[in-house]
Amino acid sequence: MAGYLTTHVLDTARGCPAKGLKIELFKIDGETRTHLKTLTTNDDGRTDEQIMPKDTFVVGIYELVFHAGDYLDACGNPAENPRFLNVIPLRFGMSEESHYHVPLLLSPFSYSTYRGS
Image (cartoon, rainbow, N blue to C red):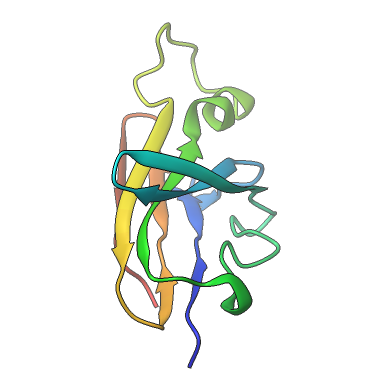
């Protein structure tokens, strides 16, 4: 079984998927951080394609960067300068050829994540 990476962003304050949230994927190799891909969430809070499909999957350390501030601004949340949550980096390891699902539960003042299925 080849591995792959997906995500799902839910706006827990509004009780809906986070549509239009920009996500970047980086590969981490020691002190080197290499940008691999930029995607945006769809109406369901997911990306239209796998973040890392089976044909490009490689075990290692990665970082998903969720651009929450731009999303929160677009949703009409009260402006803050600086915004409490703006850019949310999630660094994680993928150690086996498996499905890695890294969701983000987001509100203007908190977030959580977990390894989903």
